[in-house]
Image (tube, rainbow, N blue to C red):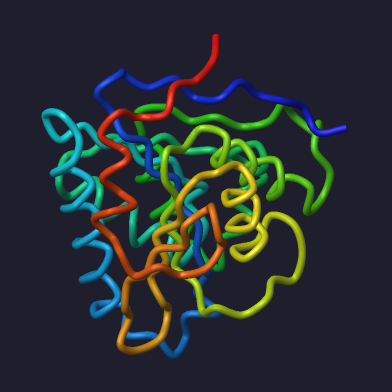
Length: 211
């Protein structure tokens, strides 16, 4: 059985932004520079809602959307917490090449905290589900870079969005294709609402984590 982990406890003034999104193979036709603009808008808006701009990023650092968002967060001095689906050495083998492994090492070195499962405690693809569930359980809001298509199983982008909505966590949906628009998937109805301010304004008092 996958091991459990208690949700990450932030400072009371911090909004916790979980990150999920497609890997590079599903972003091959995307303009990654253009995709950064809606990500910046979301980070700006969340920082404006949080006292003293307190915003913490929780990510698995997969190649693609995870790292794009982590890079934007670090560029503005935000702290990132990394939740790896496997132990670090094993996850490095998931990288596509040496440059990607070096990039991963750099992100990990700059992270506030790195959480990984105990060695060999989570087999195969179950690690991605474990990491995605911990991210959902620890977040006030989820940002998802997603093409809108159904998922291929637990732990992927679509599956993590479903888990967030079940947990009553709003999802900021950044479409992974032009025009890279932003929408909000509101937990009460599970449909895009388009009202970014109304939904995110509820995060002025971040969701408490029970002791």
